[in-house]
Image (cartoon, rainbow, N blue to C red; front, side, top):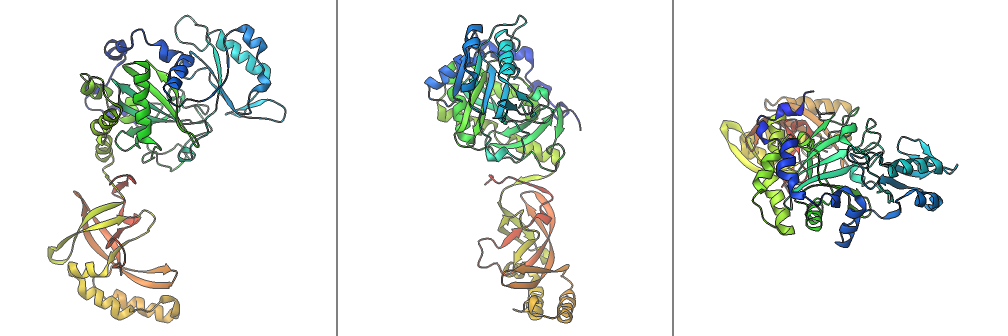
Length: 467
């Protein structure tokens, strides 16, 4: 594995900390507190009907700490500082044990006294921003229930989505996945996984962990590319609304998707981190420069710009890095037959099918009518299941006698098993050439004369949302 900045040829496209401070954070002058204080953020967003987690209670000082009724808290909740930094001081309690203590993501248990001590540390500013600790209120809020789309990818904690918004337009996004190393928190600096998101499609692309490129969830074969983000267009709209509600010209919007309530804003950041560029293997500066002269934009236009200006770039990057082309569930395929005959037909892409399949009439059109006739004369309408072992061997031997047959296979179906012959054919999708091995079948009753199965999909990445 190598550092992701090795993938970026033009470093001038990368937004650095000084550039961020001088040219972009300056837009937020006098407004940082709207994002720095989570209580103020919640109030502003709630007034604009932007969904945020419900607040169960707030402790602002030692007197309120002494009088707070901890027994009134639910079994599951989140405790966080109002002025926290990089996720510090956030405790997520998942349940309450029989002994009365609340259970954390790492299975540790906290008593009322443990929580009281943690709140005291929050009040003292232990987790706050700035060189000099600044006192902070402690917030008890609703714990979001993970959306089913992320269950297989996340370790105990809840994934979140970070979106950089500039002048009202969402410019870059990533999905942050909790890991054992991050303690179940979606914190990149603590070892969580960052996964880039294609802005047009809301589908994950490239991923990093500890500043290194990864393709699969550590310890598994589960690929991190191709995750479809639920509510994607709604998430882009909410990000734009956050900029409108706060007036912050440059901000990071953190969103969590609840399995029942949908997307909710958990935090705004007036100084968003720059690791999002590494997750996307793309520079943020170049994108922001495209928007620099942008004046106030409507919600619809902001979403359209985000998708049109910044979508598809990562797909091209994936193709150049992996050598595999991104295709959808249906494509136009060009097949070359005998004597150079080329036929272009619609093709269904099916990762659930082991082998590719081609219609008999299409095979004839490609110049293999003799092969089709041979196959029919040997097998006809006979079913393998009805034949003895000796008869099956005879059928197989006869089928292999034709020079164009590369393999004979048995296909099992509800109506019984039968023989199919495979043929080797040069094919092309867009400019990607490959050789496929397709079995001949009657597909005239189906929507596609050609089906591409997973044995012939090794040169492609499948995007289920691509049309």
